[in-house]
Structures are given as C-alpha cells and as structure tokens.
Length: 330
Image 1 (cartoon, rainbow, N blue to C red):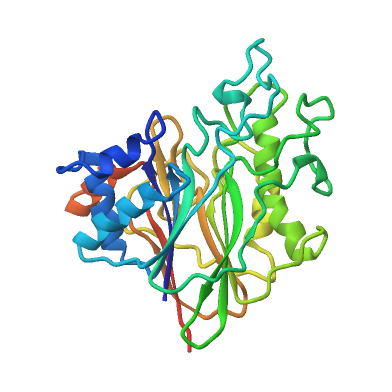
Image 2 (image 1 turned 60 degrees about the vertical axis):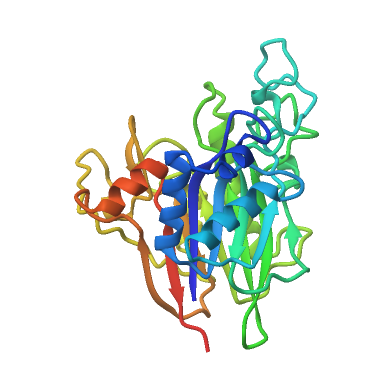
C-alpha cells in the first residue's frame, strides 16, 4: 500500500481560478505536468498540499476527473478546509491595514488558498478529526511571543492539521495525521514564523504524549505532510522536528531520490531533499512517518536524474517532489 504526500502547487491568485484551469479543454502546462506526476506516482493514498480549497470540493473533483482520464482512479477524496486566508481581525504585520493576506490565520489572499486534500483508492472513514482550530497559546510549552497581537485568537496551524481515517481491507483503520506547516521565514527579528513552525511540529509530540485535551491517535497511523523545515539545513528551529523524526512511536523511512544531484553547501544528504529552492538549494521539507507497528517495504522521493523525461515534468509541475512510502499490510 503506497502512501504519498506532494505539494503540487495547485494554487491560483484568486478563488475559482484553479477550477477554471482544470476545466479547460487543454490543461495549462503546469497543471498537465501535475497530472502526469501524480499518475507516475501511482499512490493508493495521496495527501496533496498546496491545493486551493472550495466548499464543494469542485476543484478536487475536477482534478480527480483529469486523473481518471489519465488512467488513475481515486473514488474517495476529501478537501480539507484550511486556515489560509481566514481573517483574524487583527493587524498582524503592524502596517495599519486590516484584512490583508499577512493578517489571516494563515497567509492567504483568499480563504482556502493553498490548502490540503486527500485522494484515496480506499474508503475514508467518517470519524476524522480537525485540529486546525487549536489555539497556538494553548499548546503546552509554546514559543508564541507574549506580546503577540493575536495571542487570544491565533490558531497554531498555518494551513491545517487533520486526522483522516483510511479503511483498510482487513477491517482496520489507518489514521493519517496530515499537516502543512508555515515556512520559518518572511518575518522580522521576533521570529514569529520560525516559532510557529517549531510549535506545529511540537503539536504532534504533545498529541502522542497525551499532553493535550485530545485523545492520542490509535495505531496504526502515519504522520505526513509538509514541515516547511529541513532538520539539517536552512533557517528555522529544528528541535521539535528532529524529536519527531526520532520519536520511538514513529519510524522515519528516510525516503531517497535517484537524481544523483550534489549540494556542497548543505549539511544534509541531498538524496533526502524533497524540494529545490533557487536561493536555498535542496531541502527536505516533506515527511512520511509511519507508526512503529507498521512494516515498511520501501520508500522514496520521485526524483529521477535530470536527463530523465520525468525529471523535466516534475520541474514543470512544482519545486517540490512527491514523497512515498510503501507499507506491507496483511
């Protein structure tokens, strides 16, 4: 059973524009490349990050139709409502203006920009949980600045955090703990985004430890999504992420790509990189962490050598690369 996560950059400057693109007779090159990449990935369950949300799930449905036409069927899917673009009612960037993208619960020019969705060959259960409204200030040991102008209303998760149940053929339930964290940049010396990114990873540590007024997830489960932080390179506060990667209740299969690229300025192994940035080089900013009871058969990053045609397709689709883990289930 292949579990995967991919930031496919399925976003647009305004509401409804992604749906407009996906319904065009001829797909724009980037959207077509995404369809080709997802088809090549061939995951049984796929968490997409960076996909615009709409209330009726129409954009996700249009994407599923395109995948179906390419030979990949996902009869079960859910668009996860994000925090992006949701107003806080506060002037978070201190520029005297309200209602701007930087003043939202998570950066967004409109509610739902760059959210998350799950596509699945297997049925999805109805007993999922949405952790996205959990307040940052309520997290035990949080790093939120005491003088933050939105301390009483600011949600912890920039985009979102969800528990999505996947119903397995043997009658068990595999719980996806899906999230998409804030990049630890684009702020000032107060390091608000860096602190928030740290605490978005720390949330899972607290949940696993039973330190929240929320029941810990029942195994088997998989924590997956976009950390927006490399445990070795780039900026940010990696302590919570490193603790998550080494947590005894989890396993890190360390998915590797086959591009053969080198990154002399980095400390981490470039084969582990999941995204390529013009200014930062390659970074590992996506993870899939199965619970310790799940047998892992294989893992990888869909990142072939540059001369491979799929490498060009992936580069057209997104600066991120799909990450996958194969689980051996009864």
